[in-house]
Image (cartoon, rainbow, N blue to C red; front, side, top):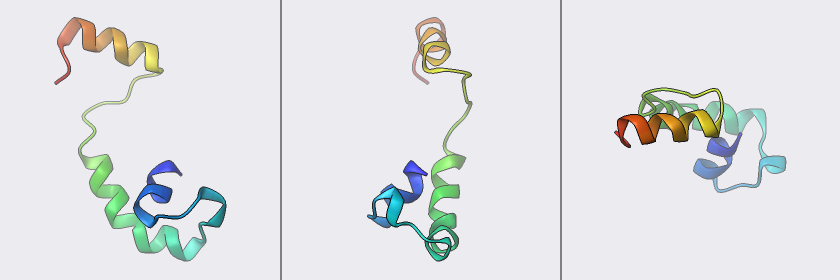
Length: 54
C-alpha cells in the first residue's frame, strides 16, 4: 500500500482500484529490485550485519 501511495502521490485512503491498476507497473519495478524479504525488520538488520548491506 505504501508503494502505491508513494508512486501515485496520494494518501493511502485516497487510492482507488483504478490507481492500483494504473501504478502496478511502477510498483512491480520497485519490487523487482528487492533481492530478499525478511520475516521482520530485526531479521533484516541481523542479515545486514552478517552479510553487509548488499
